[in-house]
Image (cartoon, rainbow, N blue to C red; front, side, top):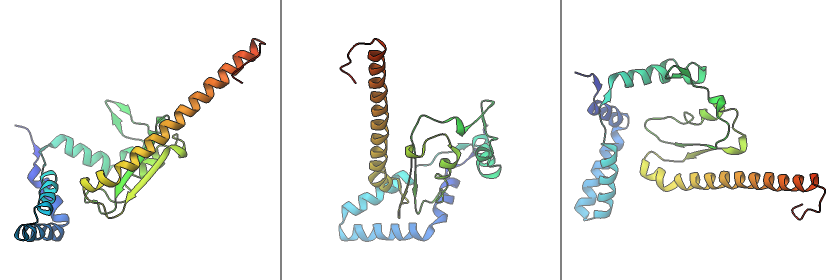
Length: 187
């Protein structure tokens, strides 16, 4: 038999953090149904279908995560390992970093994901973006409001990389023409 952190206990913790909000949401669902407002009721159902979809976590995974992340703070201290190797955020160099937070997130407080910027010191500042979505606490709102920002940030990052590569290729062609001492149409 395997020990687990049961999904129903996780759900109890999530709901109890903002019990008044959940009671009000269900009261509003009832009022929407009485008024015949099926669209609002459907939005409520879709949100809670996702919110209530929890599953049991293996106890060793849950306990290791709590210990590593929340008790020992192993990543920012440089003590976190994966498969016996130290995790080194300073080794991250050639990617863009976008962190997103919901102002009213039930699970992660403001500043938790943004801390990654301080850990990833070798990513150039122009490739780092942090976005705080005001009022956001749900995945659906995040998808509607924050994902377009992610897509724009990624587009800008890829465009900058393409421009640098084109510039290097142009410089390389120009240098090879100069070294051959022939007129160069690329310069």
